[in-house]
Length: 434
Length: 171
Image (tube, rainbow over all chains, first blue to last red; front, top):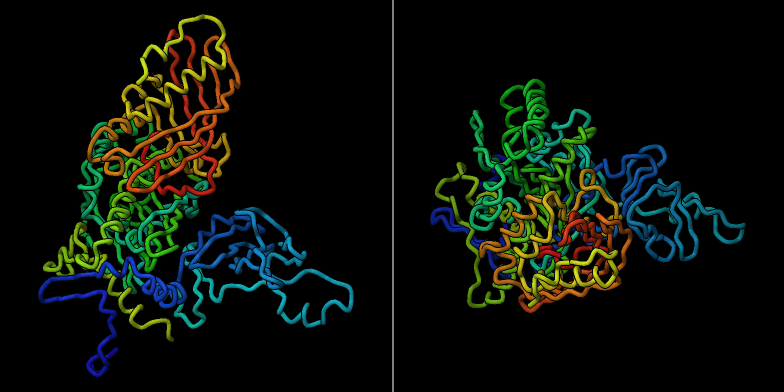
């Protein structure tokens, strides 16, 4: 947009639920945005029907014929690789009368068959039943009306597959914008690529879904909420002061509502940052990985991958946190005050089994519903949601921290959340219209 | 309240299911009553405490698959220490707990080691909400000394999803 166009453009519509005063350094979000059923309906239309949404990782359907089922954006989907290796995302409903077609959570198949009336499909979605003449016209076999219905758009970046229900959406690459560079920092950690490791953690939180988006990139809550986690690290020798010898940005607006924080931290990182708690026998292995990253990507980028932690939110609901382990996490609203969360661990493909074991062990010390930290996050989110019962008299959240610092925000500021909320506000105000 | 002596088995006769039940019920009471240091004392050095993800097979391997909890002895001790602090926010104030242990089976028994299984239903009440955890537990017990010690405890949840959202308690 040129300066002239910007000047002539009407001011962007606003919902009134997000209020930013750049001069007064005040940024507030209405608690109604977390509690209101109409807001959730608006989100379904303006966000979940229109944004690129994370579906899954290619490694989860590694072999031809592999499939899995997944709920994404309020739809039930089949994510699969056909016999020729092409990847598909189908709506998991029989085109005949609507029954759920694939009822196993995952598997490998040459075809799908609906149990209700027996319609069958090739795993590329083509209707494969053949009935005696007189049952169906020829168009049923060749015209596509009996084929599985695919999601309108399926694209991937570095094996992260996304879908959108908006046929006219910009490309995934454009949508991801600056997030691509951060994905690269994760995807480049494995010479043979990265993979999802052994299953998902699936759980519900009785809180609005956006609370988890905020929490996942919130550096401010780390010490107060997770003090017992840092106590644990101290007690087991897991603390080693973090440092990064090159200048880096603590908070980066990645565009389109995506944002990342990067920071050195005192914990170990299985990718390439040893800590005394892991013992000398694993030190050599991890130091070798570190040296490899530096050799392959040069020192500034190699050490950035090894040393710096990154918490990234990709709008609206994908979190990739490359911290003491790598977690990929997505979540969807079931109601204004309830969300379904799916979280996975990501590791280096063909990883040494000792490193893999360490990665998983390290994941669980902080992350997930049984970790030493995440349960307190869940508690915090649910306590916020309970607090919003007071919203008529206490209507606003404050996420102003760091505003006087402008673009030079710190990790424990709230600029990354402001990036998210500006995009949320823009999309909700725009509505579901094209 | 239970006496610690309940946990001691003095007879040299082979363990009966009643012996195992006494042990498991006493363990359950320690957890329900938040007597976590005493509970941890039931574990032998080197013991493991594991909770695989919902739907995982009984013999899943935490070195290859993502679990909810896969603690070695040190991390289990730290988990207990953590739960004793008021900064363990999810459990302070403590939730109210009550568990039922049933269907106790001795899977194998030797003079030194017992492998036992039981069913578990655990209710957790807090903030006007009741969480239910249900599943089965697999134990390995060191029965060589006068007091049995847990060398491995695995709680396999028979839920398809983790409805409560977290496992902030000890199961």
